[in-house]
Length: 141
Image (cartoon, rainbow, N blue to C red; front, side):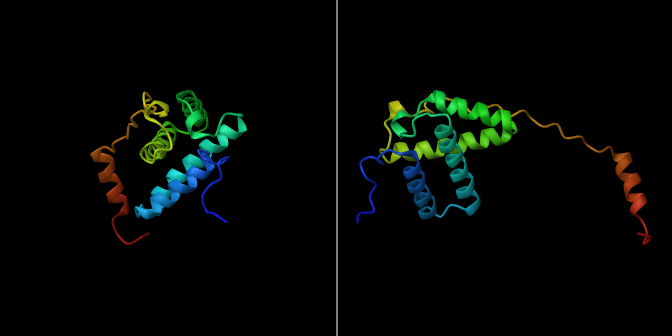
């Protein structure tokens, strides 16, 4: 029995995610990186399946990615959506390098990551820090 995918599976997203996982492990990527990349790819695969879109790499278009990222933005923070975008972008860069898709079929070719607004962090004024340190002085905790 051959380990190679059958003709029906050639170009299938699920099969390619497994190949991408093997590639990431062979490159000795950190477990956190692998988990992030594979989670995003699996979420995208599930999104395509649930909505009845093609799961063949050659048929995935920019619109599919945009719809997925829009759904992510509705469910999660912009930072999470941008992280999933970058993870999927890495997957498709790998697929392009492996010859699984042609440059013309790269759904990320003319796509930009979602904007992540800058978080404003409140700076504690110096007088409040002094009060806090004074309250912590001594051994009466």
